[in-house]
Image 1 (cartoon, rainbow, N blue to C red):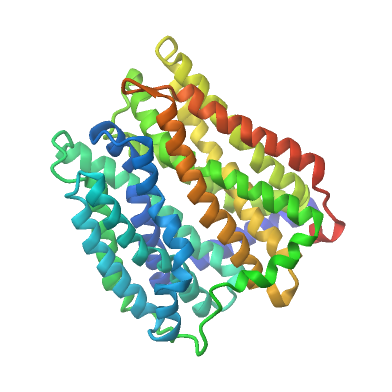
Image 2 (tube, rainbow, N blue to C red):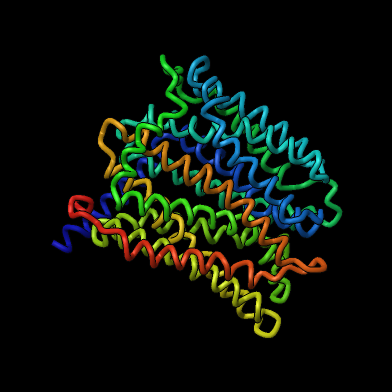
Length: 429
C-alpha cells in the first residue's frame, strides 16, 4: 500500500507539472498578476521607513489601501466587470491604468500625494485578483485539480519580482532614489499584463452580477461552535499577517547590515518565504492534510506564526553581539510555507468542506471578507501603531514589536487547540 501511495504521489506530481505548462496564457496571466504585487509589497516598507521617514501611521495608510479596496471592489470595479465587460477586457484596462498609476507613484515622496494615488491604484488592482481566478476557472477542464498548478505561477511571479529587483539595484544602484524602483518595476509588470490580457481566452460577463453581500448567506455557519471558533481565530491571525508584510523588510534591512545584507540583495533573500510556500503547498500539504486532519493542520499553521516572530524578536535583541542570529531570521522566512499554507490555504479548504453545497461560494466570500479584507485592514493599522509606539529618536525596537504578535498568535493556538473539535467526516478522503 505504501508503494502504491508513493507511485500515486509521483503520478499526481507529474500531472501537476503537466498542467502547469498546458495553459501558457493562463500561466503568464498568473505570473504577472502576482509579480506586480510582489514587486512592491515586501520591499516598499524599507523605502518608506528608511529613505522617506514615514511614521508607522503613514506606513499603515499606504499598506491599507489594498485591503480597503478589497472590501469595496465588489461594489465598484468588480460590478463593472461582472455586468458590462468581458473579464479579459476588464483585466487589460484595469492593469493598463494601474501601470500608469504605478509609474506616477514612483515619483512621489510625500504621504499627502502618495496615499490618494495608492488608493486609486488599489481601486483598479483589487478586482483583478478575482478576475484572474474567474478567467482561470472558466477555461480549465477540471478546476479543482488544475487550478493549484496554474495558481503556483503566481507565487513564482512573486519570487521572480524579488530577484529582478535585487538585480536592478545591483546594476543601477538606489542611493539617490530619484524614483521609487519598486513602483517602476510593478508598473512595467502591470502594463505587460494589461497588453497580454487582450490575448486571453474570451470570458464574457455574467448575465447577472453576483450579490456584493453574498457572504450574508453563509452567516449560518457561525452557529456551529467549531466554525465560529475557527472563524474568530482566523480573523485574529490575519491581523498579525500584516505585521510580517509591513515590518519584516525594514527589520531585516537594519539588522542585516551586520552580516552584509543590503537593500539591494534583501528582496532576493525575502523570496525564501515564497519558495518555501511552493514546496509546502506542492509536496507537504497533499501528504499532511489527509493524515493530520483539519484541526492539526490548522494548529501547525497557527503555531508557526509565534515561532517566527519569536525568532525575529530574539534576533533584534542580540544581532549586534551574535550576527549569526540574522541568518537564523533569514532561515525563519521559510516558516512562511507553514504560516500561510497550513493556516490560510487549509482555512479555505475547511470552509469549503463544511459549507453546504448551495452556499459554498458565499462561505468563501465570507471568510475572504473577514480575513483578507477586515483582518488585513485592522492589522495594517495595528502594525503602524506598534511601529510608532516602539520607535524613539528614530530607533525602532523590533524586539517588542515582534514579541506582541508572538504572544497574540500563541494565545490563539492555545484557544484553538482547546475549543476546536474535528468531526470524522472532515478528514474523510
